[in-house]
Image (cartoon, rainbow, N blue to C red; front, side):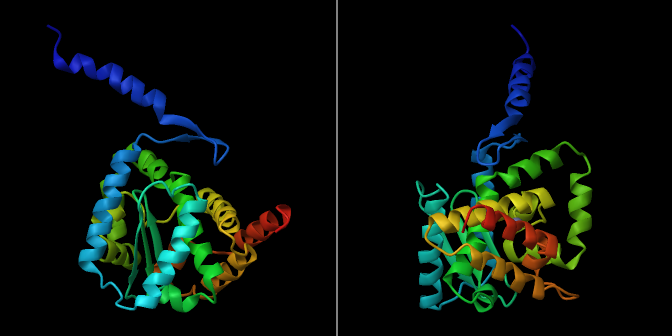
Length: 249
Ligand SMILES: [Zn+2]
């Protein structure tokens, strides 16, 4: 009899081989050692925590609006094959998230910030872009390679934004990085995918630029969480404009 642990090395080898895969949506190789099932499970957990710890808006029109716009965008993103949950959270800070596994959350603060449904679609499209691009899995995989992960998260929890994210939307969300800043490269990818999705869904891609300008104007010393984790500087907005122009939109 071979000891049980002997079987684990081929598994680890297979895991290592499958870790770096070509993502056709991005046109690049990507390292993800966290599988979709565990990511979806973490998304479920984050969603339950968000529902348990945050106040869901009783405003029917707002909830209907987010459901209608969100559904069009997730279908355009190719994510329509599973059922999606939508909720509007009572929170003045403009914020939105799309969780792997099928959940979209938007705050009342974000609904106050956007001028129209196109801009709402831009935010949801951008967040759906992070999901399609498997950015959380990619970052989590990168983080797992470092034994510093707990120390980093612990330190981050001391800062107000991260502490707020963890208390508002749950430890799982923070742990899996749904609510931590993405890299600049990932932000640019999500911007492009976001406008692709909103255009496909019938919204006006140019409104995405105005949305990010609003976000930029929202920056400052008391930067709300979403703006601080999605820094929309001039160069980033320019890149988005150039992409929209290149596509002829
Ligand atoms: Zn982003």
